[in-house]
Figure (cartoon, rainbow, N blue to C red):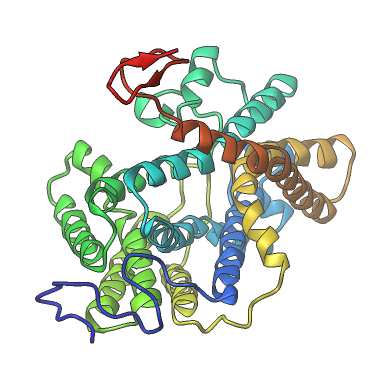
Amino acid sequence: MAPSPLTLAADPAPPVSGTASAPLPARRGRLLALDGLRLVAALMVCLYHYAGRGGPVSGSWHQTPAEVFPTLSRAATYGCLGVQFFFVISGFVICMSSWGRTLGDFFRSRVARLYPAYWVALVLVTAAAVVLPVVVHPVRPDEFLVNLTMLQQPMGAARVLGVCWTLWVEVRFYALFALFVVLRGVTYRGVVLFCCVWTLAAVVCRTNGNTLTDQLIMPDYAPFFVGGLALYLIHRFGGDLLLWGIVAVSWLLGQSNATRGLWHAGAQGDFHRDPWVITAIVTLAFAAVAAVALGWTGRANWSWLVTAGALTYPFYLVHEHLGWFVIRVLHRGLGLPPWPTLALTVFGMLLLARLIHRFVEKPFGPRLKRSLKRSRTPGVPAGFTVAKDGGTSG
């Protein structure tokens, strides 16, 4: 029986065999469908960067995307909502992957997952900026070095990757979830309390206008992460009024935040967006992850979705600025028409992502994780071991 919303004394019994201390063996189709959704979100953002906004990409096309793609651009301008879609998926995945893990396990897995491909993307984009600075100007050496930490945004340094602002949002989510949930061990009760408290804090945060609390609590993005967390609990334990209530409140707050922030033209000359369309896309994002949580995507077990999930993160990192370079070379340099240029650029970025995954993430991610796990007793020099009597031996 599911716990009363007022007690939350223990984890409810899962709907299928399993224990509350270890993740249930999820069906193959569910996880593969989630991988497919991640790639859909990445392609939405990619389409926005290539055909749905102004700014530097206009220089690569030699005119605004609205003139190059009069019809496509009106749809592509909504692609920026792929970021919110990502955040819902991230809440689901982080809750799933952290269950039964220690704080150290969680930290190592996040570092090994994020940094190898990120460092390679920094080098590639910087090299391209040096070769062809008319598209994107290279940053100063000191700023590049700060970018290696992934903390360039709070440090006020110029960003090498335009999309890295979303990584800063993700990092803050990881930190909050680690400190308030993973540190004590991930449980149903802990996740539910975290969702409720974070939601309340995000709403209250709107009333004080404090920059520090805005940075810590992230009121614009908290509902999307919270919705994903609650949907994973539904996936694991089954739905009840409390969990669906958290999802519903997250959706209501999320669509409000997205509409308020995105319906008008942005700094890059974005088109005006219809508030009804924004709400519809946010609704579809929540509904898509809910379908995975409920097991409705069990037949989506195509093997290519594994590859799609593996390519999503490196593709997301490299597609924006490197894509602008490719567009300029193909379209303005070689005179290729717009549609073939767009198709070849997307394909090229996917191919590059495949190479990064194969030759960077697969070999170096596990190595970095193992290296972080190695530790020695404080005060004992390298090459020495601790003897049974407390002494050291060489």
